[in-house]
Picture 1: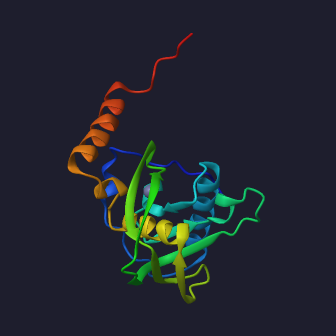
Picture 2: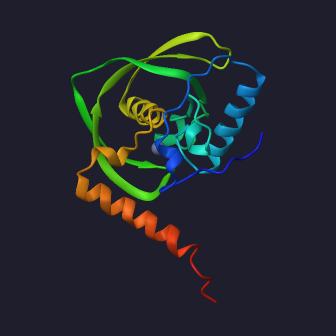
Length: 178
Ligand SMILES: [Zn+2]
């Protein structure tokens, strides 16, 4: 396992549509383990492969410790995840993204979803999720289609965020204050 670099705005790779995984093998499992390690270290509760620069339809999730820090980890690997159904009921949550550091905004999404995916053994599975899990799944599946949570904000707000990150990149790393 190895910790991977998470790409951030304005990296254009974040807008790529990820390709479906055709074979679940040890190489893929190695990538998923590295993604999980990267996600925990960030720390984050969800990560899509494209966020480490690999546009394949792979997602890691662990929401176990979000509400209870002492809870056992509950790592989940989703390959080719697809939303089969989403509820009409909506929910609004303050979201952030490891690829848009230190920016948070309220986003409205379906309150409940049913998602089909392959697990790390390549076995087809389905999950019905609500609460934070439903939000994370929708956020990560959006990443696989090149979509970011700021796309749900007003154009004005979104442009402000994009401009801020573009400017940061132009200026380069902050000088050391000695
Ligand atoms: Zn994200």
